[in-house]
Image: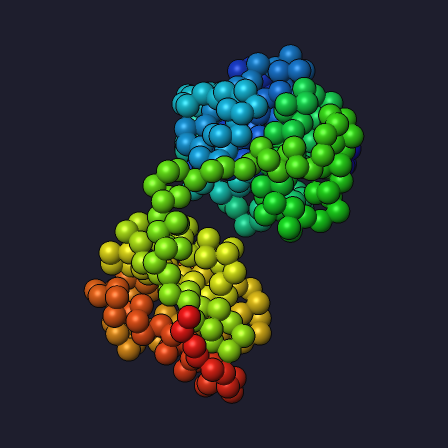
Length: 317
Ligand SMILES: [Mn+2]
């Protein structure tokens, strides 16, 4: 056990029943699994604890149900002991904790306003696994392992600590990585899947030099559709709905050309009006006439490449 986890253990064991364990609002898999892990730890040590989560993300709710866990949707915090998990920002909490008797905070994000146990860890669930010393019901250990997988983008961003915690869960409970990863596997709702398929049906494909640009049109779920087009092999995907356009870029395109969606959308907005917002690889814009903007995209991408001294041919397929 990490020395700081030992200190956390002592702080938790000093709490008095009943304890309310609260993950951040719109709790993700890491937050909700960690909350269940802390409640289990307290209950195992004779302290009555329950998880209180007024809002839970769709994926977190799905994993929770798959593994047979339940939580309370609301709780009163006045005069009782509270454990906050996976956040140290009071604005991320569903309750004002001013009136609570004691508050213990467990997190792995820096920069919050609440003091507590902030770990340099890949996920709060990795800390909770250490706290439990990997000794609990396997449903709980797998839930926490799923929290680690979720917070490391499906292990893509996992470091040795994340892999070690996953390896220890597998050595205790058996099974393989896919058993944990599959817990997080969700099928999007019907209308989202139909929108994605429509995006495939209606797409226009361009080769801009070595890059594949895809432009399409749906009536909703344009962001999910753009993401799917990148998964399907596009380097640039732009999908319009009634009054907005969502876009995604592949990491390869940004790395090799230095062109981001900030460049693309600020050019489109200055040429055609509208407004945009987002990040370099995922962003969206609002436009009065979405079709006019969509038609302008191939030429704008081509111009941006030329401005960076990257000659290419532009072909429609
Ligand atoms: Mn987390």
